[in-house]
Image (cartoon, rainbow, N blue to C red; front, side, top):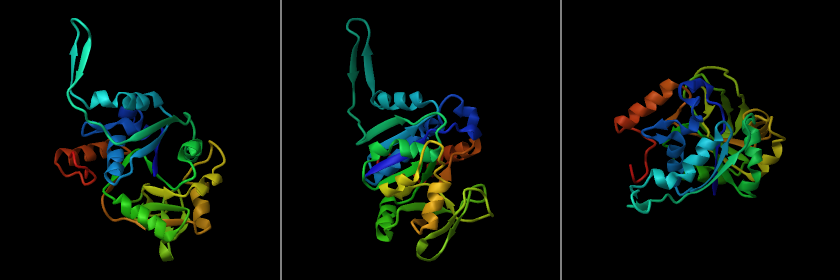
Length: 260
């Protein structure tokens, strides 16, 4: 199953670092946050990724082009032959497709642009700036059991996000992008989506969190996987510092992979 990661925004609320790189490439614990997200999916056996780039897409492309170099010990012999010796054979079990989906394309438009790479199969989707200790296998099983077009992870972080109204059978009765009240359920990303959903995205101007998800809710095709565990986005410098602190203290709940 493919995992699509939205990684094309400007990251203006964390401009202290995003002026140099896209937000998913901002590091916590010495690695880009997108790496942490991918390691979480890989921990549960999801190893094929489609990354939707936009702002400074070349930074993401260069990172994966040189991934092996960044994660290996190497000896460079310059005097005679410019010989390079690699001292370990570490490799992730990943297949990564990096797609430039346009500088000003909206979130829904970015997803539509990678439709050919997704194919006619169920896929996962998340944002490139949030980490969680969610069990992604249980999320997928929940999606299969409910047999709806979209499953999203609903969390309760506070009031600066749009809220969801969740009714019987975990159906989302209303999806509202903008803030309504404090303490409600919100879309935390980590979605599972059927390919038929893509036909409800017209072009680059479509915002995923507006018409497409609102339509899914109105037609009883959007279900919420309520999650009360750890979830944190990296929207501001303060968020980054909080995530860094958790890693430094050895108390980062999302770091579940074996090479911790």
